[in-house]
Amino acid sequence: MRITVLAGGVGAARFLRGLKAEVPDADITVIGNTGDDITLFGLHVSPDLDTVMYTLGGGISEEQGWGRDSDTFTVLAELSAYRAGSGWSGPDWFNLGDKDFATHIVRTSMLAAGQPLSAATATLCERWRPGVTLIPMTDDWTETHVLLAGNGHPDGPGPDGSGRTVHFQEWWVRLHASVPAAGITVEGAAQARPAPGVIEAIEAADVILFPPSNPVVSIGAILAVPAIAEAVRAKTVVGVSPIIGGAPVRGMADACLAAIGVPATAGAVAAHYGPQLLNGWLVDEQDKAAVDAPEPAGITVRALPLYMTSLAATATIARAALDLAQELRG
Image (cartoon, rainbow, N blue to C red):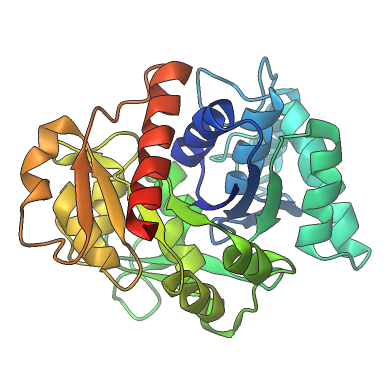
């Protein structure tokens, strides 16, 4: 079986662990979101790619769900000391551990030598051996930006007196999405080309899966690359809702949905994708009403427990997604 998964960070990584356990012999390709990518301390950081790689490779911090296990933060502390002592303004609001720095140094070195992000990702995966083919959505520059509503940024409003536009990571990590977003855009996506292997993996797949990732800034960012969305529309696609009982399972996806005017419900998220992209949708038992609700018209909805409380529970969710895909394919 060939499975292609469009993946964000923590939720996708944990889902993938269950998927691998359920179908260990499947050929799984993961297309990772790069809209979250950011340059910090001169280093190219790919948070979603790294979270998938570390999780499936056995190096993730299980407590955090991101970053390296048993990491230390000596380098970050030293950088902060320079900031305090010299007035140098560095992004010490983003927690990078010492082990994590090594990954970003290798990636940045390869990019500086002219290698594309997809090649750097493949090299990093040679160490971690995640058991899937991990490909960034594009080798081209993309960044998710957030237009803040009002004057909630610590540095005040933008130069014209209106809301300030910031990188998604600053809104998410530094501000904890506490300042409402008036808009979210994936800069560069419209001009971006899929990375080598992306379209081929979609076209060859028996099923495309949307794991319980953020529908706006994770899966939404991947689909913002036009050729990817076009290829996905031609396939059987089953998604897993990241919203349970009107709230995100993890993170602040509700704040992202509010920015684009989508209610934080399982049915509304399915309708946001629409039947052109989504054929099947798994919701939690708390959201059984979505099975017969009018919002996801044209999408087959199934209800089952969706909390990924254990590897076995996650494998059961993955199996339900694959079974629904098989049903829809006939």
